[in-house]
Length: 271
Image (cartoon, rainbow, N blue to C red; front, side, top):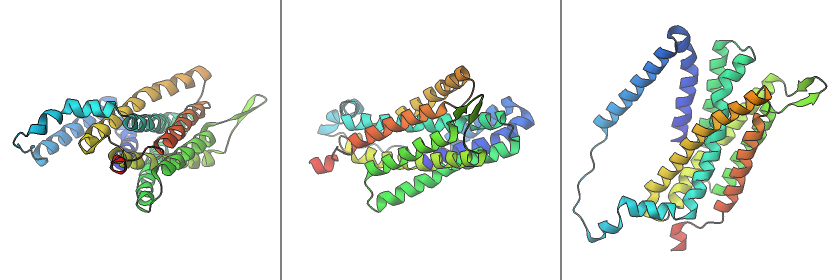
């Protein structure tokens, strides 16, 4: 699911500027509406309805409300959700504003779209690599820490500047772009790992769906809150050169929570 999200963002960043230049923002929003309607129709036609099953004595204890209470009453789902939130917040804040950053730097619109889409697509590579490493036995908490460390270093390298007199010095543009790609690639290991932990650390087999749902809500909340906050900081300081403080704070929080997740034993092992 993480790689599909990154693919969707990459395609939108690649195709959006061309369509907006051709027909304006209204046509772009209409195109997105048509895609959403087509996806809803496809789901309605392709996904079969739930099969009815006879009620059992345990159904009263297995309703959605009891599963929800078990999920929100456990520690692990909240830690996973917070980790997903601090990941998605910084990834969307950086990748989402790349077109504006590059436009302000004078990058032509065509190259702007290609460079931004490529940076977003690097997240897919991290997703796949994370899944492979998990299959080879790398500890999930270690993989999370690697991912957040890559995001921390990539964010600092991409945006940090050092004042020297009246000038602000940073890495050359090519190295900054490589840092952004490393930021996105390393971050791709995080959602791949969190979906595994969502299944492994759910309070019970019946609460996997509510645990993953809590993760997704936290991810959406991070994507909703972080871009306006980063944009506000950029407006206040007159540029994007303090964006690294937001990515570093999110990454340090992710590393700290990952360490706590590593101390929680899966439900199957506790049993």
